[in-house]
Image (cartoon, rainbow, N blue to C red; front, side, top):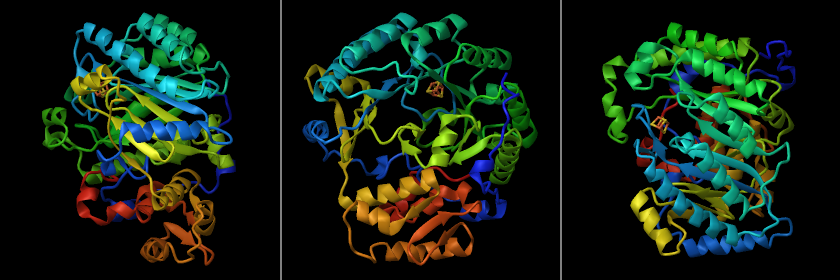
Length: 475
Ligand code: SF4
């Protein structure tokens, strides 16, 4: 255990301030801004041909960006009722064998697009459940990736995998480390047995904590755990018990997601009884108590729903202003070309976002035809780029200098954000932000838990209400 490490956030003053009244007032649906424009704006007008061209252009930049690879493994052995991910629930392991064959071919297609000397600084296997694959299959996959991309054993690399604590053993963790993974992420959600039964995810706290301790003792660079608040039967007391158990191990990073109950969009959620869910007032109290508990334990709020120990590189990046945001959430690596491989995976190449087919059959068919399996996306306009820049700065650094952002994108028009500055005024009156006469916007301590509301001011696409309703709420 690392309780003995001094936990202090002196360098990250002032501390974010949880203000229930403001959160209640600003509780509305909005994007999490892992991209801008968000996926809602993707359309079929972006073609695989454009993406290929953008990849070629990126090789020709004076200093080509490093690469980040995301590999989507969609299979899960059992269904969690809260799930909103793109996954295939099956116990038929043969499906993974067929899928890997297509994945290999897609890796090869992308590998041929990018110059050999571009280093992969970030690699993430997500899902679904990546550990649905056997260790040998994972090893072969990484070896295959290594024959098309320049993988590294640099200590600074972020090679991570989402593991299912219900099925992963110490031996598997050892293998993952030998294969080259230096970070793991595990879903926990809640240790309470009644909550676990209601969401169909039975997971022993003892075994999960044991696994967490083991990752630490084996020198994994960091371990992230995901929790969800707002699940059936949760209360302030029950969720606090879960946190107490978790804080015995002090994971490096914690993501505390808000459960958005949208059974009309996500069929598994129809198995959750609405009457069993905590109401929004109780959720707010759970969130407040959770933040207090984590803060007391020494965790630093990174932004949105992410917390980290003060000795985690993410905290250093936040302090140094080098934090970034992409589809995997917050990242310590400067903007990379993000190559998403697998069904439904999203890439960020040059000035574009592109998404693979969400349908396994058409994904495989497109690869059979030797095509990148891209079905939709967006190429960013200059306006999109400057807004993405502004939103990322607010999300990661908690401040943005508008004239500087405009200058970075060669936009000289001084009144460019005049309408946004007007819309920001009520937020400034509520002390979520301060706005200087020179266009410097600073998120206040109270605004830190309402980051997405502040960013939404700069979102050109949110003017239509239909766009807003596609996203989850603050609480
Ligand atoms: S929550 Fe994760 S493990 Fe559960 S069904 Fe969804 S993708 Fe699979």
